[in-house]
Length: 196
Ligand code: VGL
Ligand code: ZN
Image 1 (tube, protein in one colour):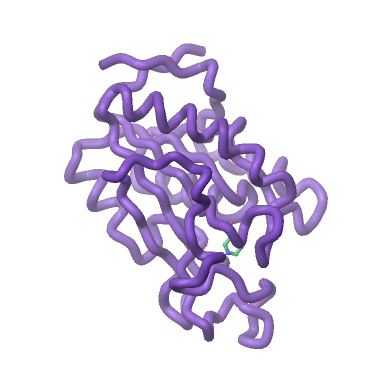
Image 2 (image 1 turned 30 degrees about the vertical axis):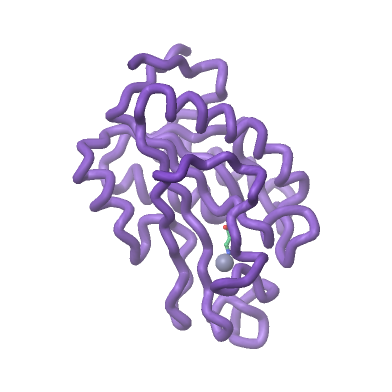
């Protein structure tokens, strides 16, 4: 498949934060392997002048998703900590839109659209197609993809630039199946080409 990228498209990089990388509080196995691939997507979108969005999990100390507060996750991505920082290995341009999510104590937000301005910012720019990759395939990437489909975007899942937690074996495969069933298109870097 060949997909031409133009400035009416957007790249959405989901939660590539220190806590989701090896050594972090909630590491995605081999999560670091997607960073060089994402950097190539970033180069391509930058070349054609397409906007780039990076979401980050941005939890308060008392977030509902943490064990002890009724959730299933270890404490992770607490606002203003090193673990919540987007990986410095990701070469995001200075005009990247940073989207914080999950910043209210009582609400979980796996989707980058939930409780954020992401949809508004995309619509303001006339964006019709979004290209989504990052961490983790079976949680925030999946929910961001489903959110985009629900809002009417033509949605591409970047299969070579996403990795899952796989709390239960097979979770990532199931997530991919669910995304495709809902209309997402799975692509890799070799499917894309720049068109200025
Ligand atoms: C995520 C678990 C908890 C994610 C966020 O970014 O996929 N997963 N919070
Ligand atoms: Zn979280």
